[in-house]
Picture 1 (cartoon, rainbow, N blue to C red):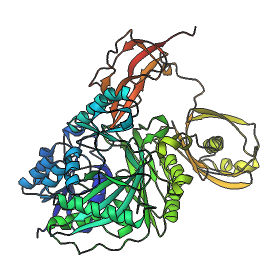
Picture 2: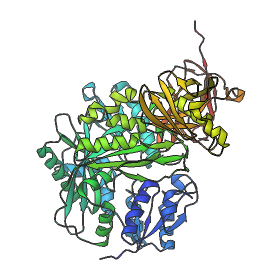
Picture 3: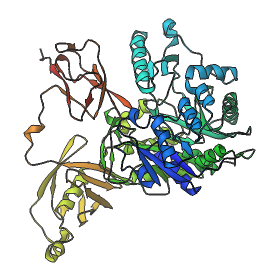
Picture 4: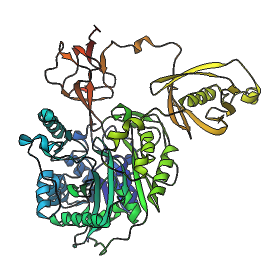
Length: 636
């Protein structure tokens, strides 16, 4: 048995905070590492000690295994937990940790290596009797093989993945997938397999010790995904026949035994509409969605990882599961704008209710460009699926999240969508429903009225006579204020007393009470520190309003056809042959920009001629930087 005393987490954000929470409960000292942008991050603030990794980019910081091991030794840590992402599935790093005399909180390096390449892993699983999809050779693919799914052999998270429905674009898709895989994982190997329409993504959490015990801790459904990355997960996977559930458990245990696994891991499967399971991959680490399994089984998987690493034996069988758990990933992104990640100050993050919130942020923190845009994971556990889903949706709907556009409304709409509540789940959910789920929230006009009334309300420290005048006693001429939200401008003409269908019951700087069509509602109003945005939260929804100045700033105007960087990032690719003078068509991809672990296409805004190209591959650009200019063809 090894007796651990101090733990370094080779990660950042919410997973580092979550691991530190368990480490403290077990009496372990905690050590954080951080890049320069993360110097004041929450995971640094909650650790007992922290070590700087000079630089900003992951390649210079959280992916520098040598610096992390040096930090662990310098801080007196005797164990390293990798979290997920970064170096968590890097067999060489695991070996280096062990060679340095530190305890590795993860599976043996040989097991990581065996599962590192999806192509090699599938060979192992085939030998172990785990069900698999037959691979397709892209060089000999025929129309009968379509649609195809191209996947990176060396990694996941949606990177290097493409769905191909037309053989004419297969070559281009292979090139793009390979380039993205090489950039993300340092390995451009890509393979093809049949793409299963309306398949479900179902996985099994496994936990193994060094004494021959392997637990299969139930199933999780992770079918709701954007860009092949999970958005909502739940345990157990609903609607699976007992025979299928048992088959998945058996296959997952066989996969773990095939590589002499130890610690926590996840075996992922694709389940077809007619109930046939196929092995996808094994993640040799803790998963983002592990809290739903913890809730259902009443376990702390991080505590069990640490005990297994110390040499403890698991009981012969896990506890019995109870109830249902659902997790939603709250991202700083705009689903209506191709899931565009957002950066800036998170002024408020307040999620009420009977839910678990795992986060790496608090109000006032800055969300930067270098890392994943996930703000928090919100988890509800209840005796039934319906109650868990309802609880989670209610908590998210009542949350106050100010400063950044998020996917919160999408999450609430997804959880309340008839297909989801009926457990009609598959990976095409957002392909079918994204447009309706990202429609502008209703009642923005009422929110703008509340904002205007709050702005005009007397300050708490105003003279007594002004405060006693009140909204309900004095009449004046209507006033006008203008706000924009979600691309729509609202001209608010407000009067202290009378509004069509609305009675003003009270108006203060931060709280306005209105009776709307006979129903009394409270609107919480908050302005950011520089008064450039107003946040209005109510049972009708949440709105971010931008006050419109009386006189527009002439510097806001840009040349027609200008392509501006939608976020800070790196230009990873320029369309082949693109030079000034090139003719382009509307919607044609011209540039590819990488930001916050995702690749974004910059499209031609109209058909015409490229008159300027300022971007080059490898260039770091700031938000709003001019990338190119397209002169639109005149209408004939």
